[in-house]
Length: 260
Image (tube, rainbow, N blue to C red):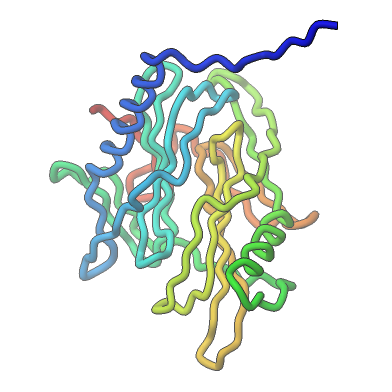
């Protein structure tokens, strides 16, 4: 009996080079924004590397990155920079910030939410905090698995009806942090995805109060113009309406066509 071995083919060098160049272009598009929070305004820092790189076979997105601006160590803005199947560059932003903010480029304000994002909610029934980062990571992964998410998606804007898609939880958080100044012992960001495209982020935080007690809190950030539903067990704990072609620069969520 002959034995055969299937060897994986390396992508052509030109494709690898183009992918690397496109990644740098997407990162530079995000870095070109100046973001300021509150009054008096203070700058928000762009996390130095994308949280993840993605594609979306359902929506026809060939390449994109998810990025984040931070308030201290905490997530304040999630954003996606991606190319549509028509070749357009799309920038999509969702605020989790504790105050109004502005995002501008070349002196032009492109996004300026006029209110703070909803506060984190306490997570009822969470476990007693683990004593080490490794134990808390196991706990946060288990808590994230208690949530499930779906979105009501149109493959084409001409479709009359949406199709509900159950989203897949990536088992490893895309960001892990602590912020003692904000009373955060541990925190993690989990992604619920189409393919590898994050349609919603779950942010978990373990907070310490002045008396030394710990409690778990969470927030959800939809990263799509389509309706999103999130459940914990069988109970819906979050939803956002369809926002296709409806977002405005003063909204907590906004999407626009970027012209490099």
